[in-house]
Amino acid sequence: MLRVVHTGTGLPASYPLDPTSEFESGMVAQLKIIGNDIVAGVSDGTAPLGLIDDVRTSAFTKAQVDEVVIIEVNTLHIGESNGVRVSLTNQNGPLEFPHINRNSFTSTLTVTLNDVNGIITVPTGTPLNYDSDGDGDFNAFKVVVSYVYRIATKPGDDSTVGSGRITVHYQRGIYATDQFDTLQLYPLNANLYVGVDGKLTTEQPTENHPAIAWVSGPPSAANGTLEFMWL
Image (cartoon, rainbow, N blue to C red):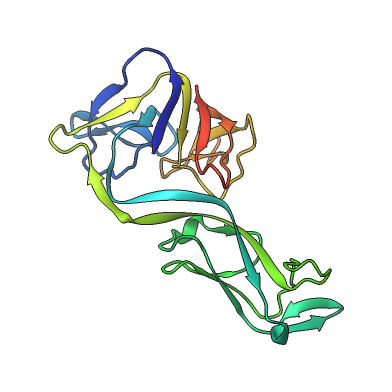
């Protein structure tokens, strides 16, 4: 997803499409040479051109940021270790969405992820960290997770069919996207780079990867998009 918040009056550019690229709106484009042709495809972060406003993918994805999962533990399954309440059995909890990209998953607790059905498992012996009933004793786990999931109800699409061209926004302006690296934090005013997958990130992959934007609106649980100023 790409949302244009504010930009100039100029129109986006249109380039011949790299036929090997798959992408979603909001990823970053880069010029490439195939044979004798100059084409545009997904950027590897070294020479970002602009923001893609087309889609060519077999499945749509979306970022889920700071989802809170509360897993209550039955008193029969609570023990004590060195004065700390712990779970005596594995404890499972459902995430809001299944079909998760495992490489995008982060968690505040050590858990096992079933990426197909979206179930996390807190292993036996993990200290409880949340008081869900307010009696002063921990009786649950509070886990905060972020991840990218495949939207099962939305099949892929290709908006470049017929034209063989890709639309790219290159003007300085404020934009928002859900195509960003969920493994990173996005503090206000932080520099943004492009990862090797064409998604925005606050981690500079190498010293040869230039900063191309800065964070103007960090993603949150209420708003799963990253707002930024494209430079």
